[in-house]
Image (cartoon, rainbow, N blue to C red; front, side):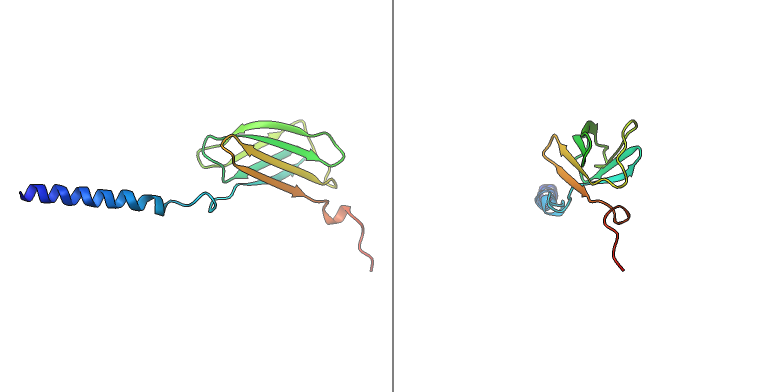
Length: 123
């Protein structure tokens, strides 16, 4: 009878751990996907917060230039880095980078015209 109580106690403890497990994992809103423009010549894009092994379609749209895209597979860490070796974006061009994952993960970056390229401030 004592063996039954011990195994019953283990079973109850295991069920309690299983019930608590979903509460211990971060919610999807806690991990937010982001995308960054690492370099402009050549164009290098990185992303974080995606699902492991998720396929992500990247689209780079420089203002005043043609858009280009690529599909990347995210690493187990939820990150990716990719280089568009034959593409560049002027350092004075605004650019929009979007990443859309096959599992619905999304991230957008709107890189505005940097200060040295815009209207010069008046003294």
